[in-house]
Each structure stands twice: as C-alpha cells, then as structure tokens.
Image 1 (cartoon, helix red, strand yellow):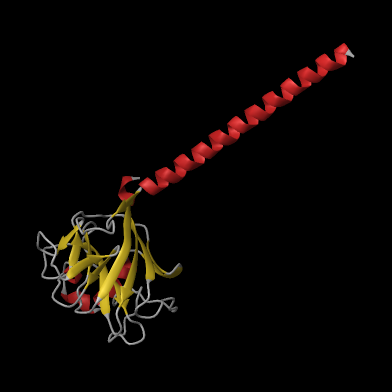
Image 2 (cartoon, rainbow, N blue to C red):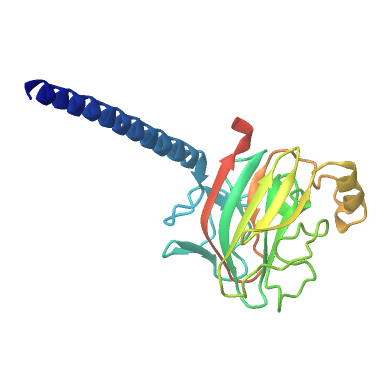
Length: 238
C-alpha cells in the first residue's frame, strides 16, 4: 500500500512536469507569434495618423494648403485650388495602402516616383486613377494606370463610399489592387511599358516614368476627395 502511494506521487510529479513543459512551449510560441506580428506591423510607416499632414507638403511648396482639411481621422480636399500633395520622403520600391472616397462626378489620382523637376506631378510620375466610375468625366477608371494599363473588372464602391487601394511598386513587378481585387500588373521600364508610353500622350514628356525613386502624390483635380489609413512599407530596405 505504501509502495503504491509512493508510485502515485511520483507519477503525479512526472505528469505535472510534462504539463508545465508543454505550457512553457505554448507560451514561448505565443510570444514568438506576437513578436512576428509586431515586427511585420512595424515595417509599415504611417503616413497619416488621423491628426495632421506632417508627412506631406504641397508640390514645390514647403507647407500644405488649408483647403486640405483634417477632421475625424480623415483628410479631405474640400475643393479646387488646394494643389497636389506629395510625401516629404521619396520612395523607390514600396507597398502602399490607403482608403479613398471620391465625390460624385469627382476625379483625383495617386502618382508615384514623382520628381519636382517638371511643372506638375503627372509629367514625371505614373498615375493610378481615382474617379467616380459611374459619373466621372474621364474614360480612365479607378485603379487603372492612367493611359497605360487598364482592368476588365470594376470592384469599386459608389461615389461617396470608401474604397481600399493597395499598390506594390518594385523593379521586378508592379501591381494594383482595389477592394482586394487585382486590377493589373506591369514592369515599369520594360519593352512593353516603353511601347505603351510611346503610344500615349505621355510621349510628349521626356521625363515621364523615367525616375526610379520619387515622391508619392495625391492629386488636386478640382473635386472633393478624402483619404484615410495611409501607410507605406519601404521594400528597398529588405
């Protein structure tokens, strides 16, 4: 009877040891998972924190025109004359995410690899179109690379509602997504790219699409447009 009691105590101790070890491993795994998630999140740079436009300025200016208004975690171009915004930093390879809301009949755009060597951002930087797809006054649709690459789908929400844009720009491949749907892909500077540029209005602008690093620009096309949740991941640092 005494031996059985001793064996029972030993068995309980061994079982407890195994349970403790397993729990420690689980905790370690959970900690590692959280560290990984935190590290991935830390790779994103917040360009708009919902409070101010300190990471932006107007094209060829040092400040931001007051027609770009920040309110309730959103920044809005309240009417024409606010001027194109550009990021203070320049980027080469990057991943960018933002939400936009365009007004009825509205038009805007996002340009990348923008240089201030020309009169407007679109003379150097390719433009990802932002427009009211239903009532906008331009055949180019949201998510298309203006005048160069189009899409056969339309995943946009109507004017006045939020849309999520996601673009990836690298020397190997560029991709556009709207509301989780892939719109197009291309290689900037490839023979196909050069052929399309040569057949477009941009052939008149010798610096168009030539930069491999530059500002990101949000366009003043004279219409009300809002943005939120703007963040970027610099892929050149990998």
